[in-house]
Image (cartoon, rainbow over all chains, first blue to last red; front, top):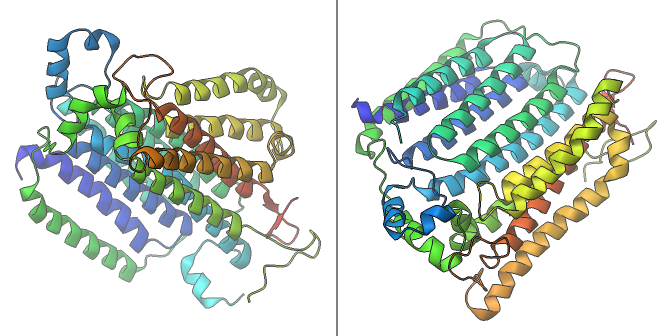
Length: 125
Length: 184
Length: 149
């Protein structure tokens, strides 16, 4: 594993922790926590892909605009703006789907009285 | 700008420790607090990777996630998780996880190195954003001018998710003899 | 959801307006500084959630009822679609009319501030409506939940 691929591998470890929580846990709250961790891991991975070492954030200031030499230098060394734009909406979508998941969890608790997934299959209404 | 690599490694390792605590602990309140810590550390990582919009959004979203999760878990009676060890679920989780990790070790060999992005499309966006759109924030110019169709799709997804939450939590009838929506 | 103590209510009365103004600032200046429609919308809904937590859900349902939240959500989505179709008459979908090279003023960059406002309204109203749908449930007599409206 070369040294420059290590941050991607750490993001993959986070993804695997979330996957283990979804597959191996029986409490509905832990499954929701697993989904949240997987969303964080995927967003982190995509932003890590767009990073340029020694770069600055892709926002142009007024003083930068007045100096064409520094502007050209900014365009060559700025961080990639495309993954950031897509992950920005993905973070808010993660919040909206979390609200939907918690709504379903509330209905499950109301109907079965427990958060345990294995008991939900056995009881009937 | 200084090289932030050791800071990013340390923060991601702290995030991994925090998420392991969140998954494994038996008390639901500790789980929620650990997830809050993981989210705030993620916002710090975004700030160090040169993404200030993402850092602000992640902080505020994390606050709302904490409030909603506490509303779900702490206002119940049973706040500890008592589960006996289910060997099959544990084993299958480890098998899936191990398979994914080894597959990623193999597939990441072709990835670009960290810190040298490809930028085949984004270089054009960076060069032209200021003259073609007039927006100083290049991320907003990409999101609302160059890729505005994707933003329409994302707004639709948020709409559909919240609509689903409304439908799931709906009741008909009066409060005293409330009954569920009949299956048609 | 009941309200909280007197200290929380007093501090919220002072702070909630600042949070709302901060959210509107981030939405309006989205094309010049970090932020934009999504970030500002989430901050606006956070202000409303603070009002709900501090004063109880009856107060914030007075401020913005569930039907009003759904209506504002739809208005934001329709405004975004109208911005898209207005560009369609001139060029392609989402064509940025009135765009000119950078002037760093508030009223610049064509349709981008209008899209920011539409998305800010939409995300703020949607997340507040979703939180209200979760909050009107309360513990019923037999241990389940019933809708409290």
